[in-house]
Length: 177
Image 1: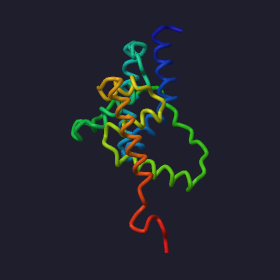
Image 2: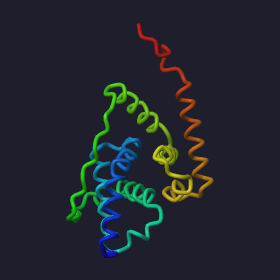
Image 3: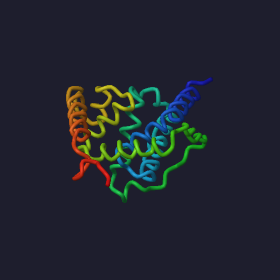
Image 4: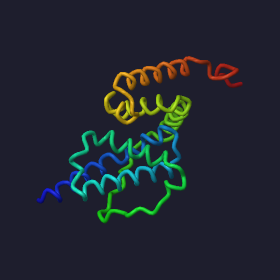
């Protein structure tokens, strides 16, 4: 296997494994499905271009890198975001859906997404990256802040969520008649 082929194979393995997690990361931030899928696709295409040019192995933290690229794609102005991109020749398989508990899991997911949407953007990103298993250093690199600031954002997000969870559900304290 040539180095060029190895580079592409490593990239393909990575994006195949990581794609559903990057999509989940964006969905947790409250991004609509279509925009999240577009941003993930653009990030995967950028990863593939790096692999084709022989630079994939130079990406130090690929899990953080692909999330940062997806966020950057998402945050581009609308006119520049929707452009025709060259699609890689290799088919990237669709992620396999995990079995779920149906409506109960959906309700929990909606609650989490709603709570995350209520956080300041950087805090929501920091918490979502932590949920994906990224370190404070990786989170700081994605957000463009230091390691300590990333930890502070995570602490602030957790504190806000604890307050939200402790607050009464509504004017009738969650009771129904």
